[in-house]
Length: 570
Image (cartoon, rainbow, N blue to C red):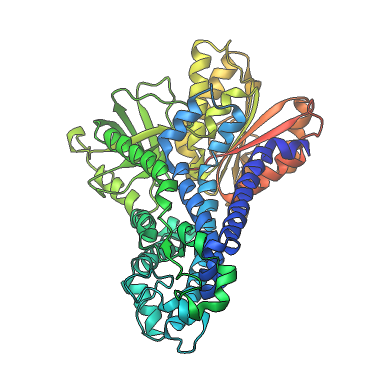
């Protein structure tokens, strides 16, 4: 239980508070429309569908207020870097911003579905009540407003039967038309946000996600038509619906109840979302201002395994280890921004990223930088680059622990390139103030070529630690996961050589996948009573494995060993 609190406690607490607020708002607004006499006659027309439409509308307002906050990257980076307001646990929750963003999006989808279905019943019953010929209460209520001195409660004023009546509401009423538009926008946004679309058709995801502008505009004006109407306070003072409804046919006559008067609910959504919309507008202005600052590409390095390294300089650029930036190359796309982890160290006079060529945009960047040509590319021919950032990630907290496990899969090793470079620089100058005492580094790759661009850094670190008689500071394990029988045979033949035949390092390359349970238990025995940071940049499956191992191998005793799992999210 102790580890569960350490690894998931605050996150679970945040989720429970969020879910609790959704339940509270739903129940509160359901009762607000299902109980008060103000909506007595509205309920006579629409039944419980009135409350079932308004309750999720309140939850939609709440969640639409939250949905933009997790993507205000500059705000989150400011909070994350402010030690006065953010402890390590709070920063770990800020690192889960995209997870929370997705959860809120699914909650918006759920309440949109409930809200829409309830209103479909409301529209159908409103249309039917307007066409009712019998002398019923619903018919009498629907006819209110036909005379100049009356106000209506049934928003549908035409006499068009269903289904054309419902279609008329959907495409001629402000509430109906905006409802259709924002629902379609939401469907496109959510369906294009699946992992398959994001990875294979990023442009589709990127462009459709910006339909959020249409979604929010429609959301704000959706309630301006005021189709949900209730009895006015002045009318309630002289017309008690629970008494007067029995004699509806005599309303307005001498000695009977006066005709009830109604008014529409004022739009409320804007009050919920105006603050986050303003913050997000400021966020976009800051991004635009940053994107206009000049960035100079000082060097382009072509690495094996379809990977290029861009070394850049920008006036006033300051970074910390493990941070990431967003990059735009107008020569490839004038609108698209893509996130990349910084692979340089804060101590270096430039900042760099490693880009693996896996899609149309990265292929375009590869060609724009002249990497598809054999001849030397002049610096002035290199494309213009816009940079937004840097932004904080979990890897920033590496130096907050005495012992860390760094796990990278494939190109996911890039955040730790920055960490290891920074460690190297600190050891080259003065490492006495370095809290970090032990690094366990794991790198999992399917292909041998992927090791080549990173091996030089590991060799430098290996040499540096040996020269300072601190070879135990860095323990690294490189796993080749995509091996076959012939490779294994070659590995066995050369295993006894002083240096590894693949990486040139003293530490031998391992085949297959790590036995994570053994790794965690071994590290736990070597560091009793420690808080060990576990940092991953890799796939979700590996994240689940490491998170479970962090939980199961941590002790319930607060004085025992605790593994704190952190994952890169951007």
